Image (cartoon, rainbow, N blue to C red; front, top):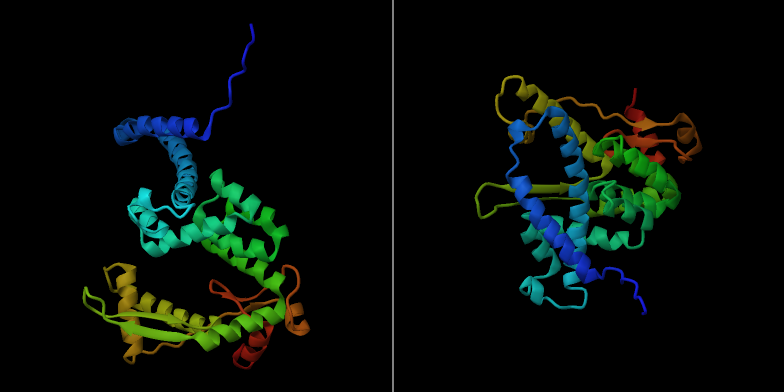
Length: 290
């Protein structure tokens, strides 16, 4: 009698198994008596859930892309992928669109895409790393390792330096020129009332604004009990209506790069916490430096 080997699970059967598992897990998550969970177990579960949450986020975005892969929108009620993902996650359409664009970008970045799918890094970390990896593919391993130990802010600075070094001085100067040409400050009145504003500045000019805001906010926080973001809004009004403060903007640049006129390797030329600048701009600031 012939024996037929069992066939490998199909995509459909695996999807059904996943749905059953998620439905079974749902009740355990909602009904977990947290107060009765021992502290060591709570820490382990939190870490485990965080990793799975990253996996779920990547899979969810991939599934939304699949829904409309052939141009069909019936499954989403006629909504475009970004609108559908925003509704599913309860986030803004802009955030959903960024997640979808990242997923498409990761199609061409295999190692980075795999790290997102396995929950090794979050989509926020991938957003930061992707431009640097595209500029310098050899930096992938170092950036993925850094993502495990560094904060998102630190990772952003590291990625910016990597991209800066890979692109060269001419490209950095061109980026600064483009931002300068496209700079703006817009204000509008939303339906909910009040006034909203948005600005796009060059790195150095933006750093000056941030430094002034930080200093004035710190002064106001000493006597305020309100939330820091609310106090920061008060600081902005104070600065714009005459409450000036003396500020300093730090620039970190390696001496060799300053003399040479360009960064090489791991050398830096940047406004710490804000972003890279060209050596040309750093040299121009020397007149005001001490």
